[in-house]
Image 1 (cartoon, rainbow, N blue to C red):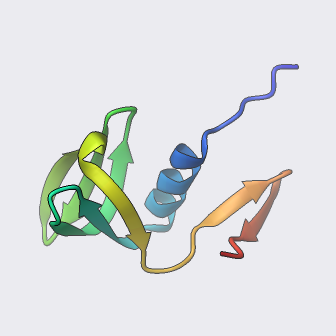
Image 2 (tube, one colour; image 1 turned 180 degrees about the horizontal axis):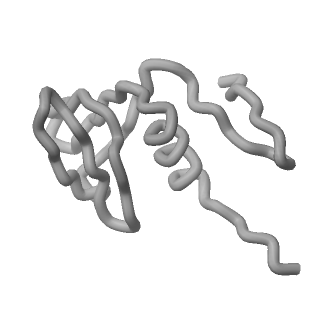
Image 3 (cartoon, rainbow, N blue to C red; image 1 turned 90 degrees about the vertical axis):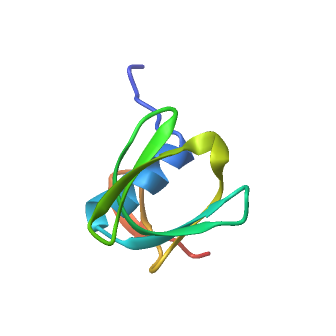
Length: 83
């Protein structure tokens, strides 16, 4: 009964962070930030881009596009996203 459920956002961001994937972060104002996710919490994402760290507020993000598909964990197995 003590099963921990992760939300999809956390699984996605943690997968990108662990794999050190390059991502493009699309913002609501049209800007695009390219870099690697270094960390995140409920409100922010830390992005390394060209040797600089950026703290981006999640409410300003519309889309995060990884360079490669993110691996998701289901039933203790790692599987590649089919989408």
